[in-house]
Length: 165
Image 1 (tube, rainbow, N blue to C red):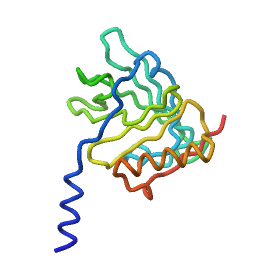
Image 2 (tube, one colour; image 1 turned 30 degrees about the vertical axis):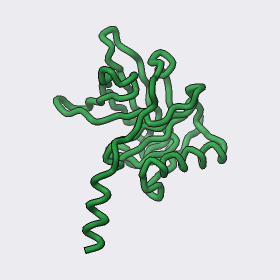
Image 3 (cartoon, one colour; image 1 turned 135 degrees about the horizontal axis):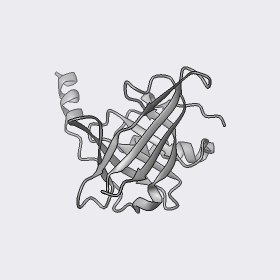
Image 4 (cartoon, one colour; image 1 turned 45 degrees about the vertical axis):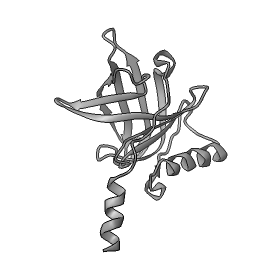
């Protein structure tokens, strides 16, 4: 009975809070994926980078690329389109990899200098810790992992992704 109640409690997590506002122009550009609780398409990524560019219609052209299995592995590239949810302060998006399905994309943390961000989901199933630089100092990394844990994630599932020039 206790296990059933524990599982029920996991399903009733409060909504994921997002940052109050995002300056979309500042958010655009390259983000290095430092660590994640990855999706199925993110198998064994090396040098994973997410690039954002705002289209004239307000959608976000996204390029997610990485080398699979090693720094010299096959290049994998995906091009989802982001749509900003109205009245969300630009902090809530929907990402569409395949029509008609859209995935939740919540900017749950963004440093004031736009150098680190955490992208989360209400289900607490996936999370991405990203930086403008390919490496974070250990103190910054641990502070961001603590934020992710405070959001309700099992941080033992976080995978750190390797980067090199």
